[in-house]
Image (cartoon, rainbow, N blue to C red; front, side, top):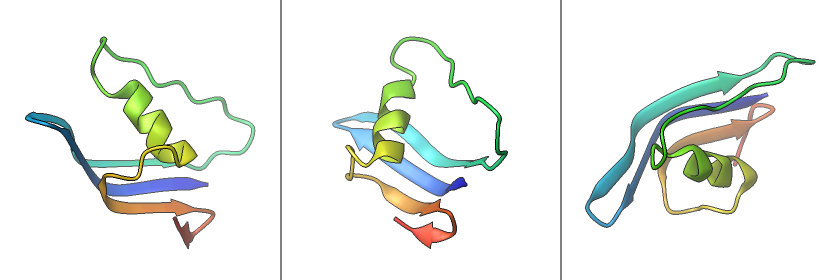
Length: 66
């Protein structure tokens, strides 16, 4: 299970996420993240995979803080 609470992320003057909260908790389900170019899809993926660390908020993997 992945749970994101109040994730905030900025690049220079651009706010990428402002209090983003999401939960991915269903086994056997394939999730899809869709949106316009520049909407933060890759940034969200980088946060989830640990490649991006310059954000505020809470990130839990199997109820363990990341």
